[in-house]
Image 1 (cartoon, rainbow, N blue to C red):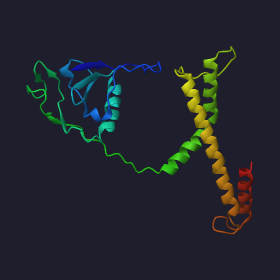
Image 2 (image 1 turned 90 degrees about the horizontal axis):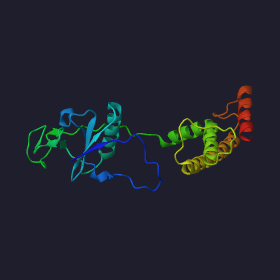
Image 3 (image 1 turned 30 degrees about the vertical axis):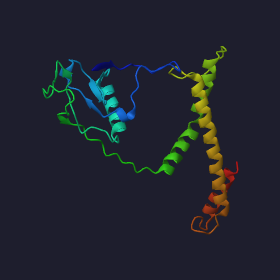
Image 4 (image 1 turned 90 degrees about the vertical axis):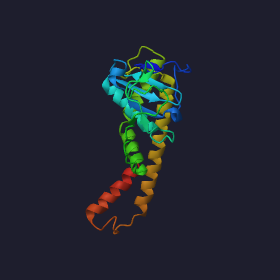
Length: 226
């Protein structure tokens, strides 16, 4: 039995080994623990094949976030348990059911997983993300400049984000790749729209006859040629 106190920050040093790792197939259940088990609040458990890891979150909000995320991750695990012990195994017995066999089956059903709707229109979502990134490209470039200021401080006034960038090199490389990808997609998008606009016949259903529609169509083609 292990009691863990959750850390409040991520591992900063690149290449350093984490204190503990748990493979996803070994997460058999993630459930809350009765407070009277350890006389502590905000406790939850990660049930593994060889042990149960008891963890104390810093507050109830953090506890709920961890339980919800981990439960969703392991809900497709073929080895996921159907029952668990809400109490701890202390002094030779389970506090919840008083059973003296530590390896016995749980006494309560695990929480039912959420029936998440996975019907996502990937093309629409990608288009939305592309539009958002293009609209806020100035912010992205500001953060990229901040990476340069933070990596080599020259004394010049520069924009700095509210939070400290822990890994400047990785942040700059990721944002650069994102910016280049977005610009490439934007060029292809404009090229496609130009081809559609030029093939569109005046007087068709898409471009009906009328002075206003003619001017609108001409304006669209001109803007795409910029």
